[in-house]
Length: 149
Image (cartoon, rainbow, N blue to C red; front, side, top):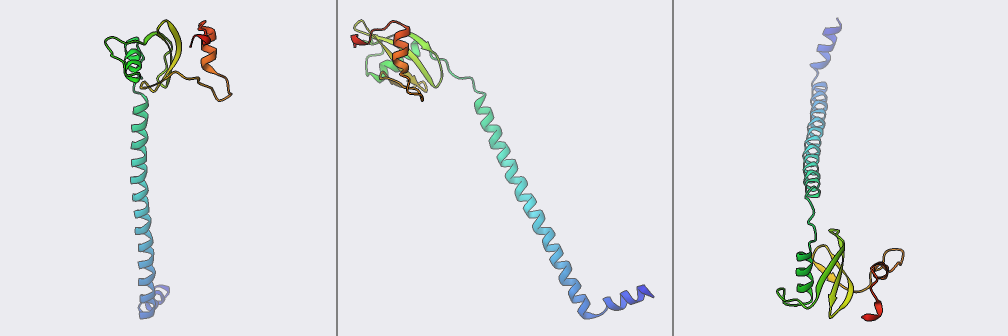
């Protein structure tokens, strides 16, 4: 008898309409959930590939500053003839890809110079975040007289 009662209730047009609406809403929720999952997976995949690309860029071996490269950077910055420069690179003190320290000589006067990112060159004082004059410290360490400037 219970099955007959259920069939009798489901045959009612009002119940059928409500059942169709309920199943449509439930199906719509499932489809929206699947779309959100698909969009999330695509975004995660793209983010992961960008992360992998960034990590592969970090594994590129950094270039080392040689005397020839330093001389070329200094000559280019000072607009000197690269084959016959007036300012000569004597020594590379700290060979770092981001900030390299070099000693240059012009007319028998030695100076501390800096090369940033293997392309920018300057000879002024450089201070660290604690206010310590790095140029002065290196000049003292290598016995370069500041008064000769």
